[in-house]
Length: 364
Image (cartoon, rainbow, N blue to C red):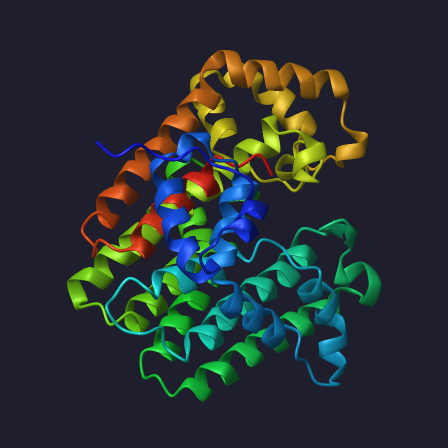
């Protein structure tokens, strides 16, 4: 049985006597086998180095803006960076087939990121957000109306890029994604106003708000990789399970994460009136905690009663709500891996398996 290598510093790749382009695929295999010993930062760094040229091209395209007024509003958000998770997913998965990477991969990866950032601009208006990625939101600088138009402008940029690819499947997939995003946003608002949200409703919302963008990225990747219909269905199934697991983990970090690592205050979702899976699980099984939760809902994080916050964190842990949410993440990961195992056995498949562990095991 082949022994997995112990992960080492990514910087050590520069000391290898073989070209990095040859070293990276082997490193991916090693990381995939020893994923439990791999930090998120190092794992993502290796993935990014493997796809460095394409990721750099995506970054250039994202910030290659004209002098439109809307561009000036959207540019700080795009330039602030981020993990670029969805482009990373698309670029990796587009190598699943036996074809050379498509020339359209960079453009379509940029499309997905434009749509994602458009939703962030719109979300910040809906949520009355003050900061994003440590900086004032566009709505705080330019006002809500201009921020909404800037988000609309990013959607137009995405549609123009799709048109340039000439791919007949690219536009319908993007329109389906945008439709799902809008429906999920409206559903979330209606549920918040009704006060009758259930775990099933929560899953419908995150499927539309989060998993839809992962599905778009992997739908594009499936076509770019030349996969057949059945393989593309497996890939979109993988995307759905990964997207749901990713969002549940994000919601857990909002409740029990370290603000120094996440860069966000605790209970930010409750402050915006959003009841996430652990909270809904607790309310269903121990409704006596409803008054504590209501006291923190729609309350600015800096004004929250610290004692109540700490009390609720303890209750979430002792009640089993956190463990139940983690179990759902694991269930989704198993389903995702089941889909993935039906795809061609390639370095890209190993990379995607690694990516699932890194994204749902993250602390920020």
